[in-house]
Amino acid sequence: MRISAQMTIVFAAIFAAICFGVAIRGFMSLSEIADAAQLDDARGFAWFWAFLGAIGVAFGAVSFWIVRAEKDETGG
Image (cartoon, rainbow, N blue to C red):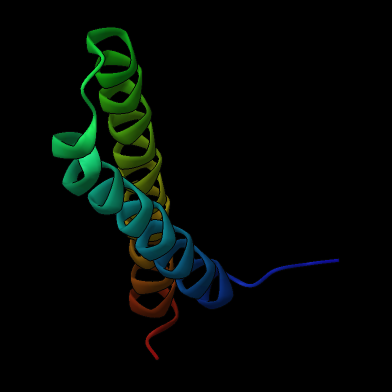
């Protein structure tokens, strides 16, 4: 299965939105945790999802750059 560069941008945006949503929900729920060990684990979990969201944004940006460079190269 081949995925076009435009479709990669869409997939990356969806992936990043989901990851950032999980990260935000994780950060918002930190105040409900009383145990210090669980708090550290939850904070790490939220930062991990934020990192995954950043990876999604990076892949989307690279795909956007490829699409734009290809259009400039072909003149269309």
